[in-house]
Length: 196
Image 1: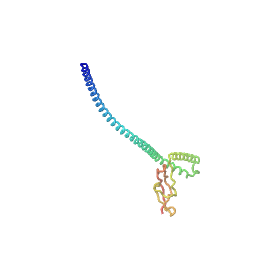
Image 2 (image 1 turned 135 degrees about the vertical axis):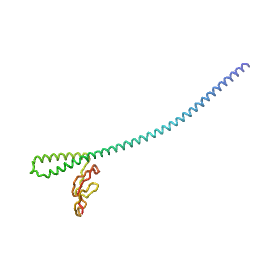
Image 3 (image 1 turned 90 degrees about the horizontal axis):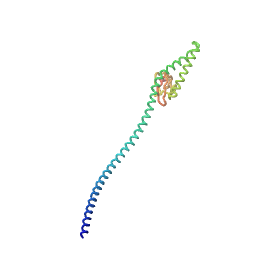
């Protein structure tokens, strides 16, 4: 019996020891559960932040794409208007050459050295052809307004002449040509209009 008591006592010690170990494991398990809950909460927070950052990234990408398209369009417009500035500076030269050409075309070749006048006229013709090619390549064309109704968007009235019922409000003389760049008026014509 002594032996049984010893075994029983030994079993009780073992049992207490095992219960103590189970209690420690349960405490550790509870700590781990708390850690897991904390990690899950942090993971949820990180997932929410990641979703917010992704949403911001998508919006920024769309904003940047819109910005890129807008600046591309504005860049083309600025280039187009930059051309206008250059072209407007060329017009006075063209006007002087045109005036000289018209003046020389009216000179009697018999009164002057014919060869010299023909050379000057050929040179002026070459200049005008070059200007015409330049204007055409830039999308510039002159407006055909003579003997057509006056259009205030395309003409600037310099003079008014007595007219009839048939030609009332018609452009009868062009003092300075007007030009279009694509579909816009680049420079209005200076003209004379008939009025009754």
